[in-house]
Length: 498
Image (cartoon, rainbow, N blue to C red; front, side):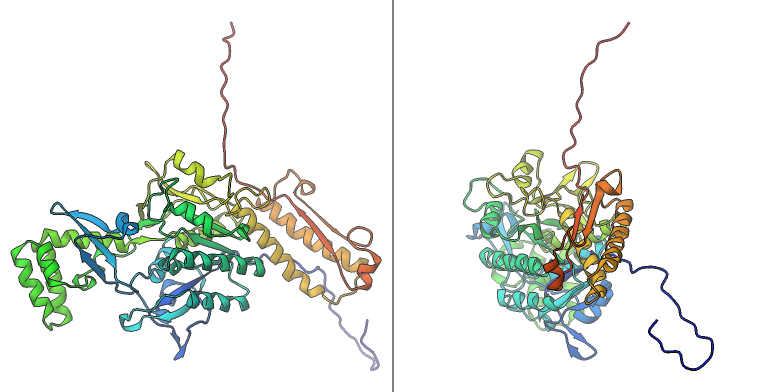
């Protein structure tokens, strides 16, 4: 009782009846880094500033909307890496459609995919803008600068960089290695990564195998802080009504050869003159009606523009699973929304080398389609797939949640007396929190003794020298629940009894 009582009277003192408690931190707050239409809030630029948004409407208000990409249309393509993505047959002839330089941006559509799969609050880091549909120069430097800004933010728990796949694969994977290093240093977040050119069907042993390239270039450090998903997804996020003749880089000589319908030529010549937006839309609708060839081209653009990397969808699914089941539930065997099908059909045998790789140990989670069920996430491993400690992404994220929750709760005991009273309080506070998590299903075991232990005290975790040097050492052991990845049912015949 520190107060001095001098004047006679009645004094009231309120005593704390309950000890401090550990409160679970948020687990599903992704941070997206990429290019946006604008980055303005209250008249101030938000470029390279992490901004928290709660919905797609919040995003559009601050960062604007879609980018209107343009495509080259040509009769042949010599770039073999793009053939599977861009080539189609029209009138018996192979045609190629590909993004013109600087127009292959994924950020906005990936944000739409994130919210379509249950996403909620997230952080947006805009590294540059494309206001007025100007084509930004996508660089490794920009994206890494955006990553640097997140070092001062405590809340984000996931890092997603959809636009990294636009860069050459070596630069893309350099960024990914920096993201993994960032997550390991911060210790409170994980990276969700895409496979560069993940729309291509892998051919094991080929020089351009996208999976082998990923494993070769992703490095070997901090792998337990990341998870990768393959393949890319054919979605329906962008509506066909959002595509028009303006999406095609016009070369009249090519279009006249490609579109044989006589009336179409007159329409194209009219389009090349200076007409307003309404007439351009009318022209597009006329072409769709009168030219089957043009309609086929628009269909191909629709498929190409809806081909998206899966990381943002996974961020949304992480949020959904965390909110409905808990962070300890593996984000797998869940349906991906707004997806028509994966860009590559993966079979049971195909997935064997994705899920487990004896040489590199770098697991890649498959997204597969199952008849009558739909498109499901069919993998729950980190990149450190051979590690007994950090093999599963839900184990990594659950430990992060427990670590950060306990860390924040212990701040109130910094500079408290390092004695038995403090030790007992700290131990009971952590045990109460872990008991609650055990009851919710985060920890395995038939009793709390099987699920966890908390040790703190002189002769247990500390020596007299530790106390003299101001160190209070707390040891926590956890039995994290792990997914039933392989379910094996054994059948045996039994002799008939009389």
